[in-house]
Image (cartoon, rainbow, N blue to C red; front, top):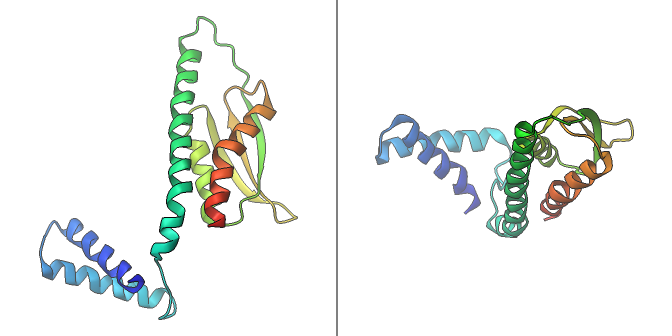
Length: 165
């Protein structure tokens, strides 16, 4: 089943890109997918495993729910700041050290922080000891520990659960 995943997806994507629904368009896309799969690694490479996808469903949905909640809360906070008669903010730059190990999860953490209103990731780097860190700008940095703890509990913990699965 895993060997068929890439050709099926690329076949469907090719049909969408060419705006042609039919077996010939699907076959061309599937052929491109097989070529990509063959050039991308060894013949016994498994690009998709259903068991792993099912294991990631629960932590992924939990992460998605946390992210949506943080998105709503951050938007309300930004609205409160903008509509206030006097804008009382303390913007600042902070560095967040993460325990995530895979580059995909590290990038996802940076993207999620950037997409949350009021924060912006401007640099991701590895420390000398191999630790991963993200430098970010926060619109209201009155309590730095609270900001770091919120990132850790809302984003990093679910990402680590997905990484361990």
